[in-house]
Image 1 (cartoon, rainbow, N blue to C red):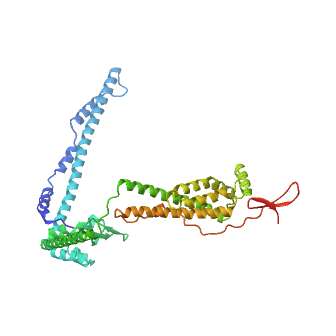
Image 2: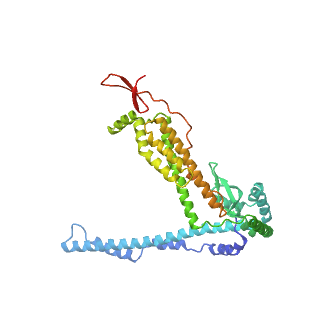
Image 3: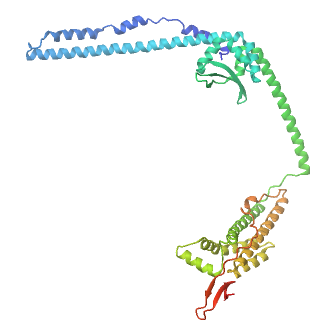
Length: 434
């Protein structure tokens, strides 16, 4: 796009400054190539050296010939170095001249584009209004009637300019020119603020646009003020019917933290119980005496099985789960129930079905203990005007396993070595086989 009109004066001055060609390049080139004093001296010393002919030299004349020849070569090299330095300076000057001419052409093109746009400002304003609605026909027509501007934009794009798109960048209305290269790929240029164009080439349209924005900003400010006042009055009315929550005192906040820790521990204990119940229900874990003996030997000899590993996990965790449940149930209504379930688990360690039933019961007791702690905490929060908490982050990650009777284990048989009687293991005791 062309420059804005406030820059016209400086642009015209720049065009005058860079115009014209007063550099004596021909004379400078001749001077750079002309022989200098060192060339004359080198020629004279070389003439002296050439007077002494090979085959007629005495020791003294040979020395004179060598010295004068070296002096001639040295002066000739220095003379050439001076010419090279002059030529380098001249090359720099010629490059500057070429750049200056190129810049002069660019400035003249910018002036021509500015003059075009100044005569078609109203058309440009109408084209921008059309472009804001998605219609590019006005911009295409404007570019067609401003060939210097189109040429300048094409040079900047590196492809023939076709049209432009209208968009907002950081809240500013802008035009983004585009074209297509030889392969048909879209090439976009730099964003141009709409206000800059209108201010330079359609000042009346810019003033109207500016006035509309000011009016809209004033209306928006009024709406925001009215909304803020309405929110204030609503807040005042709500404060009378729903007073704001009081800050929870440090002592109560500490109690709440301890309660959340208990609820989280109960959830972790139930997660561990669920893993053991899953192993029992799948038939992977059996706690009877024979399986304990076989599993212990398998683990000891490094020949572990899923059953032996599950039993080892159970044996290492069951006491901790029971003790944690008893500790966490203290002070709430489930304390007695937890003690009875714990005693039942420890009293029948070899009956797999009984262990599963008591663990499931202990899990339910732990859940009730957590619910009692939640209720007590929410009651405390309500006294200070706070809503109940969301405890999902502290609860077990697994759901309570569905009640499922474990698969009946295949009976284990043995024989009395003294009597020869056939025996079977039942309920942890050896009894005559049926």
